Length: 104
Image: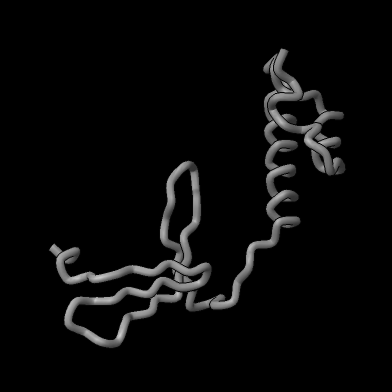
């Protein structure tokens, strides 16, 4: 088992440092911990985009576009948002297009 060879693990925002038993120099991995769907995962830096950063504005825009597409695709569902609500999802900066806004 590999755990018997690990002395210490230090997690920083942008890297993980592993100290092995009997080795003076630690191993550094460019990675970070990311929460995704209630799980914590290790995210390594991409070889194609080593300095990639998350763009919160782009993420919000993609989410709103998905919500609008879903609202337009399911008009027969009584719990879905009418088309004007879909447009509000794309243009609004508030939580007007969250699912809780349509719940009774």
